[in-house]
Amino acid sequence: MTKADPIALEAAVWAALAEVRDPEIPPVSITDLGIVERVIVSDDTVDVELLPTFVGCPALDVIREDAEHAGRAASDGRDVRVRFVYSPPWTSDRITPAGREALRSYGLTPPGHGAVFVPLASLGSRDAPPVPCPFCGGTDTELESAFGPTLCRSTHFCRSCRNPFEAFKPKQAKG
Amino acid sequence: MADPRLGLLFALGDDELVLGHRHSEWTGWAPHIEEDLAFSSIAQDEMAHARLLYGLAREIDGRGEDELALGRQPDEYRNAVLCERPNRDWGYSIARQYLYDTADAVRLEALAESSWRELADVVAVIRLEEKYHLDHARAWFTRLADGPLEARQHFAEGLSAALGEAVGLFEPLPDESSLVKDGVLSASNEDLLGRWLGRLGAELEDASIDYVLERHSQAREMVPTSAGEIPAEEDVLAVPGIARRDGRWVHEGEFAGAGGRHGRHSEDFLPLWEEMTKLHREHPGATW
Image (tube, rainbow over all chains, first blue to last red):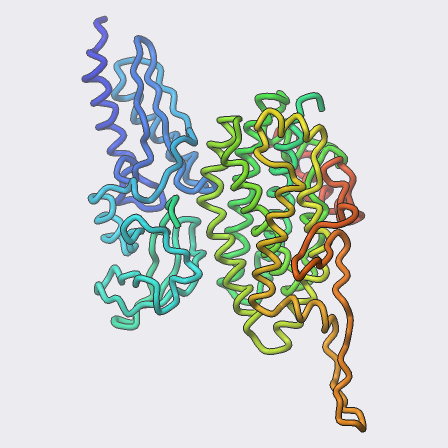
């Protein structure tokens, strides 16, 4: 059996991983979240290195299993090993423009205001940049809690369209 | 414990695990649902951080993460006594979280510079998440410190109760000098304690909480004397291990609340350990 070209195979594994969804945010793929750090193809194995978003997230085990499954289907019989690594740290700047749009479509305001980490204690203050509403785009919103239904979400209220909404929490080194 | 790095990892990991366990006890009982979620989420983070640290310990110790988290004997746990104390009330819980997370920020800052690459990497990840804990602690600090007398009093009482034992977070580790020499620890715990006390003193002073701590350990009814004076309460701050020198807080005397880094715990630890490890002990090898 001829082994596939490693470069083509690496691309095929990336494409397969792009179909793996975050189980808690189905419209977003793990490549758009910026979780996939490296795919390393050798003669007999494919190693996939993932970065955890929030390390206590219970979805991580599911993501690893799904990534293993997807990788195996694309790896031409090679052994697929998926593991989490901690360098570099995942930050919300790794989310792609497509990923940000997918978050918004799911009713979650994407994180980040440029490169500056916004401490959530001040998110509710007048000086803090507004977290726009994912439904109406309004910026007259208030922080309800920095701790929402999952580790990566905060809860807010929009005074314009009077909807409660959630945002994906920024995670950045600066600030 | 031959490798001193284990003493460091167990100190850090056990602090997170045991305080995380206490935080989780607020689940369902916090004053309102947002705080229920906040303490539950912080607990979830802390346990995940402990797991990362046990993952490093595993490479040295040989035992797996579950075995390290739940399979050790009580005197093998190296958390500071502060972390094992019951939640008491909201004022104490918030004061303890504030003291712990400001202290944790100081030591993580130093550990990010560690010569031990794997530890520095894990610490970089942990620090990004601890910012949210610090924000939570600071939001409550401001709310209570700027609040009415009763709120300030309640918070000051929590601080008084927790402050002495918080010093124990910086109790020197077994064979700490070799950790410092190798650059695993970029500063000694004594140095870190000094840094923390400097920042803490400034924050409490800015919020005038040090005054509440120092002069009004108990709010009493003020009764003017016949001369029209209001007798001042002069309960001077007496926190073991901490003294005021030239208006600054410094470490002085013994390490208050010490013992944890050597496996010596308070009477509150055993009941916590029994509950935390019960399932693991009764069903060895059980997994989710």
